[in-house]
Image (tube, rainbow, N blue to C red; front, side):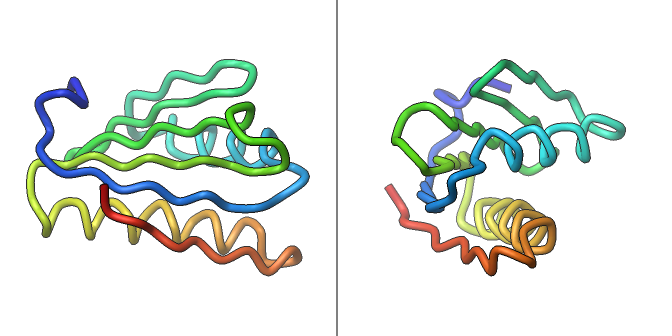
Length: 102
């Protein structure tokens, strides 16, 4: 699924000194059921409702998460799934994922 064909997108910039750890954890969690690409500082997860890309090197001490989907409902579901998983994984750090529509 190419992100260029998806009409809507959003971004969350999550401050954390362990961005690569959370990027890896998210990708490895979903790779058992979904197509996932995982690099040293970037990742991509293809969900049925859209695509999520993660970047731990774009902004220092920040995990940048981008979500893209065809419509509002799908984008909202994608944001919810990714955000809830990250917040659950990072419960000790009390991270909050706040999405900004682009």
